[in-house]
Amino acid sequence: MAMYEGMKADQAAGAGSNRRRMIDLRSDTVTRPSAGMRQAMADAEVGDDVYGEDPTVDALQAKAAELLGKEAGLFLPTGTQSNLVGLMTHCQRGEEYIVGDCYHIFHDEAAGAAVLASISPCPLITDDKGGLSVDAVQMAIKADDPHYAISRLVCLENTVSGRVQDQDTIDAIAEMAHNRGMSVHLDGARLMNAAVASNCSPAHLARNADTVSLCLSKGLGTPVGSVLCGPRDFINRAFRARKMLGGAMRQVGVLAACGLYALEHNIERLADDHRRATRMAEGLSRFPSLGVTHDPDHTNMLFVEPRDEDHAPLLEHLAGEGIVFAAQKPAIRLVTHLDISDEDVETVITAVGDYYAKAGKSLAAAGS
Ligand SMILES: Cc1ncc(COP(=O)(O)O)c(C=O)c1O
Image 1 (cartoon, helix red, strand yellow):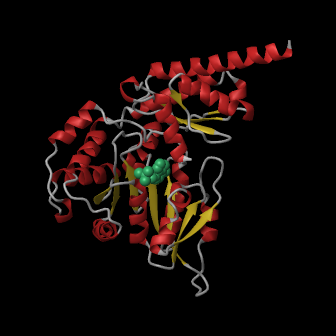
Image 2 (cartoon, helix red, strand yellow; image 1 turned 60 degrees about the horizontal axis):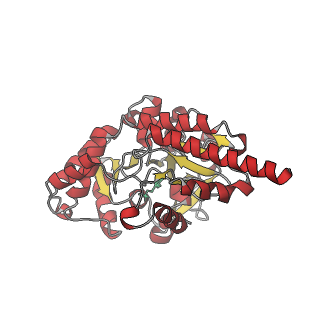
Image 3 (cartoon, helix red, strand yellow; image 1 turned 120 degrees about the vertical axis):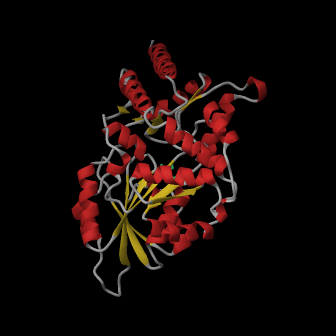
């Protein structure tokens, strides 16, 4: 599916010098590094980070840890590896983590914790906003019985499908888990969106999680990178797990420089992405058969669910206009990001309107 989506965007963009700029709404991972970010890469001071000698990586790790209110940070190539290193450092073989069934760690990371680390997932059904309840997590914690896996870790996520999670519930789950001798890892791939949307510091949102993984390559707009943050002794142990997984990189300050640039320039502007998602949802709501879902807590995402017969023709029409929607079914996730402007939002609304106007005319013609 991901392969199909990629080919589709490329085909729609065309080839060589005729390549046109696309309005790509599939994900906030599709951004290209800005001129300022590329300059920061070019200017980065670097060293061999496996020897701990890259000053730009050190600066990024320190900055991320400070923002998230943790003692230390570790730079990793991806959010998937950051989560896996976190799980491997929290849990031993035969232990388990409790997690929402739609969370990325459980659902979208190729079962890495089970395959590579013999850590067992205990997935729980989330509510319609992506949340878990304290009671459900508490009930899932296993008794100390040799028949059972050892419940070691609770994994939470914020945002979930763009939705800011209820902080009181996160805090209550964390408190209960800690009282039961467990740790809490937060997949904060888009925690900065949650922080900006709820006008809270990221450190406040993460304060009851032992460890947090923050992605730099989503709304923050870097080409690569995540930072795992937590207590210093935890991060020292995580260093070994990263090495084991092949994630220890050398003069990687050129990439860390993008992350530093993003943390300095691209956090507050997430509010623009949220405003644009809201505006797009308002504009698209004019077409009832598009089935738009967007609540105020949805940050930079909205969802549309076109009727089955419209699904392929709508996407084809939009591709012809230089607009890429993901080919998911039935609901399609639309994501605003650094490379989507106010004008792009209006272009999308107009193009969808044109599709429904044409579809209406051909229906009328077929009926006449
Ligand atoms: C919530 C969440 N966590 C983790 C990841 C993994 O990040 P990466 O693609 O860098 O491995 C993603 C990726 O989209 C995500 O959405």
